[in-house]
Length: 247
Length: 52
Image 1: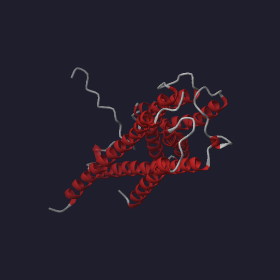
Image 2 (image 1 turned 120 degrees about the horizontal axis):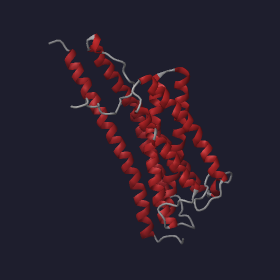
Image 3 (image 1 turned 45 degrees about the vertical axis):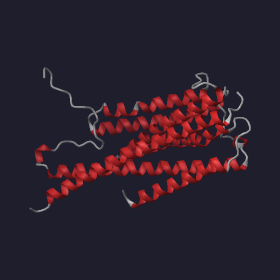
Image 4 (image 1 turned 90 degrees about the horizontal axis):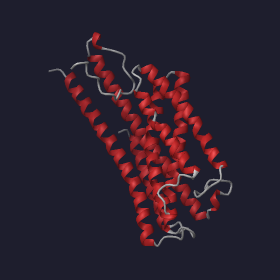
């Protein structure tokens, strides 16, 4: 682990500790929902960071398509992977909050919930699509094209949901800032900052891990005799080898 | 729906935060295991390169 990763990890841990200290010891209980509203400080920053990650992956995919630099493909892959994992957290925390506030784990008639699920399922297709292609160059191009198109869909989807009539899910981010009092807004911003730091530190950790693994593979290949070398994929192909017919 | 009493609300709030914590800890531990494997492989490679 590099020293930047260690510092970033420590900063993220400290920021998360401070932010969630504010949640439980500084921010007041909301008048309508009471203590359950504390989930808001986890669920909403997690959702924002996740969606921003998907959009950032699209920008990285575009960088790869323009420059052909494989590092952008790697970054794009890691960003989508991490955002997808955090999206599971958004869905789970949202579902718990929905059960506590509305009495249901899921409300299919609510556009905000269904649209986020659609985005999640869309990005869940990224890895199967990527690893269905054997040729490393084609794999990277197809994956980055997918990332660009899917990233364009995210803000479009978000805007469409904002225009739709809310059924049960509140629309927090607007010109009035959800009409939060100052202490709640400060706490929310602290949680958002901490979540961003956590995302960045996890992202760097995975990028560095994958870069080290690629260098190690290249080092091993450089020690192999010449005829054994073949086109090397940037990311490992996760499909198991297919057994020969009749074996 | 009226606000839940603290004892019931606390369970939901704790559940949401525990889910998040488990997700992050699982991710970090998987990454740490991979980093350890890369380090081990690098050590093996370095040992192979040393003159005998």
